Image (tube, rainbow, N blue to C red; front, side, top):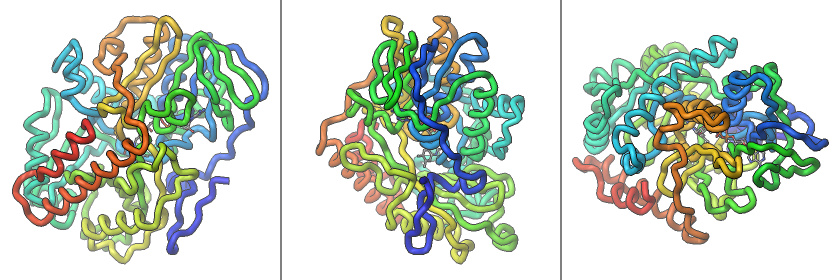
Length: 463
Ligand SMILES: Cc1cc2nc3c(=O)[nH]c(=O)nc-3n(C[C@H](O)[C@H](O)[C@H](O)COP(=O)(O)OP(=O)(O)OC[C@H]3O[C@@H](n4cnc5c(N)ncnc54)[C@H](O)[C@@H]3O)c2cc1C
């Protein structure tokens, strides 16, 4: 049902490469009887599963149902680049406009850093084997303008951020990326195998007594009630954890924009190629372009690399089983070859894509309305692997009506205006990425300053 197809000889879709290692799950049968529970969580990705985990741990008597349209881990949680990163999900200046100002941003960043360790701790404690290595993240600059961007990021860093600048030689000694002239290294990031993490967490929450109903799509979400194809679920708390798929839910079409991200993975690289590339520290790797790439060296010695592809499909459409366009595969192969010419003869084993949610101000949020019991978390703009854990613990506190350090963070109850109607939404995103690509081309040609086109793209998108 979720099997990949072939595009020009490359396996395409099948949800993601990560499932070719553990096998695609066969989704459970749809919920066929009405339920009464204390909390109904819609969406069986990491946000929904972490929320169930921490709620059940806080109160083992609480009755929780997770409703998942496909199978748990079908969405971005089972498809991502495996960066368990402490990066802020969105714009620091937008969060700083809240009542706590910069101090609130500092608190949020501190919590994200400790969330990286929290995920590692829980995985070890619960016996989840997700190929986790706390290897840090290397950001490479491959043009003078990219180096300026790396330095600007370091200059803006708040206390507690442990990122340091690296020279071109220091960068290349870690990973021999062609054309690297410098970079930065941040130790607060870990590599994970996303599907192993998500399915591992699923087993843990099921063993704790959480009911997870797969093949069960929420058609309507209202205070106290979720309506699915065959059954209704009543609950004083209904928590929406549907990230990039939120626009499909009744009444939420313009809420968050489903942004596409695509990846390819190579066959395992031969030992002699690895000896040229290095990458022995298994760092996460990205560049500082406007349309940036992100990559990891997998546990079985492949390179998995991702980037934007077609950023947005008209009217918030999403892919069906992770299948991506032929030109996206070609363009990712081009990025791979330009960064690692040593690996240009190694075939691409699989390509896939998925969606992440982008709010109009590029800031994630989490909240529970006291009056209605309706809650949500998401809009992580592609930095959700760690943030889902923080969201889960925050939703726990909000549901249990406890005032904690987490419920005082600036993303709690953060509200944002809706996206423009079509065709403006589609035209806007297309123009933004057109500007980013033009800016990257200009910067690659050696322009010494950050391109004005990149700034214009940021302004257009509200980034
Ligand atoms: C290709 C790609 C690479 C990425 N790389 C990284 C990375 O390296 N690091 C990082 O931090 N972030 C990354 N992200 C983002 C990160 O994966 C997400 O932010 C995170 O997984 C979001 O988790 P979630 O549970 O909120 O959403 P999802 O994992 O998308 O889960 C939502 C679930 O809700 C279900 N659903 C939707 N609608 C309904 C409904 N009506 N009824 C029932 N169920 C429903 C879906 O089927 C899905 O399983 C990446 C994303 C993509 C697509």
